[in-house]
Length: 210
Ligand SMILES: O=C(O)CCC(=O)C(=O)O
Ligand SMILES: [Fe+2]
Image (cartoon, rainbow, N blue to C red; front, side, top):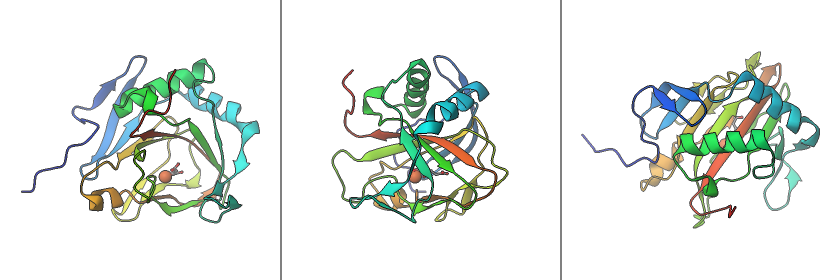
């Protein structure tokens, strides 16, 4: 049997005890490593993230031309790094769960999808092989979606249902580029209701100096 490549996240057991919250490992895909995590955020934290983001959402713009894109039809915003006590706590917890120092964290992103909106299959890492590439993703679901809105990994045939307070984690820092490519994923169209997520990305290099 081929030996597995080293992962960033050392997944063992079913519970992850962070500084301020116990998180549960609900499901695991071995290679590439994908984890479904329960109880990442409290219901109150989900509601507060949505409330704080609501008036700051902008229609997705992608790529250098910054044109409104059909690749992602959702709206998005980024919080300032450690913008307030809520953001500080959630960023710190995400970094702890992802086993990467907070200094490597991008600003926390919020995405909002209305019925019919989606994020077509994409990689989170940059295809130019940047020395400061992204290495891992934590997508936290901020509400229950009535229908649709799964995070879908088409190369694996794996769907993750959004559930308020849960999250999906995956990483793509493998030497074997084929493993990284298997993390292709999409936010499938919301059929009814709406969908809110918070995404934390980690980079190879330090992003924050405070
Ligand atoms: O909304 C989703 O399920 C996927 C979001 C996503 O892929 C991202 O934020 O990079
Ligand atoms: Fe993504």
